[in-house]
Image (tube, rainbow, N blue to C red; front, side, top):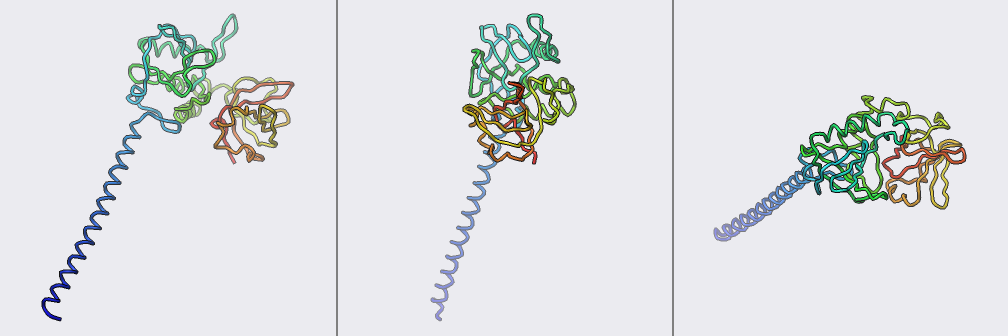
Length: 291
């Protein structure tokens, strides 16, 4: 081979090596660019207001989530307030024991929840209101999460003190994971209302025939049936889980028919009709399969 031919071959090999290097460099840069934007996205998400399933907001994030502001005129009970502009506000995501009205006795810890809310609002009359999907209820009350001017969440405070139950009235479920987490910590520490026997998990077979109100029940599903308006999952001959068919869309993560012979934990409102009890569930958040 002549010297000129050898030079040509070497030149061609150098060109091919340079092309290969440029391709590797391009791919490496692309990977780095992808990683950079992924990290930016994660940072953005971590600073964004929490959605269902995300952790509790920081005070700074609480303030960023506020949609509008109001001034408190009166505290009605542990989960209801009136504003100076005439709006009646029901706190989302929690339920506190009722205060006694018209001579009736208050429920246990009802006065404590009321006093705790009064104390929170004593020096911070201005409050931030954040909304979820439904902004009013059937009583025409405004449904809102309440944030104080220092970024403190009123709901989180009451749950952490053991003065409120975490509830979901669908479709408002934005902070359910946070609220259940705080409730679980208060329960484990036996704070406030979590000292009461009616707020403990109880086997379905041991539930009193006189029991009523909010209850926490464990049991094994023995039968599935439907009526025109409801779905029933039998736990004992006299106790069933009831799910309104209009709420079935809020159980999309659960195959209700597949719960046969499975042990479950349920939390909901207990009713008695014709000596038969049913515990009413509104969402899948209130039903946990334990085997």
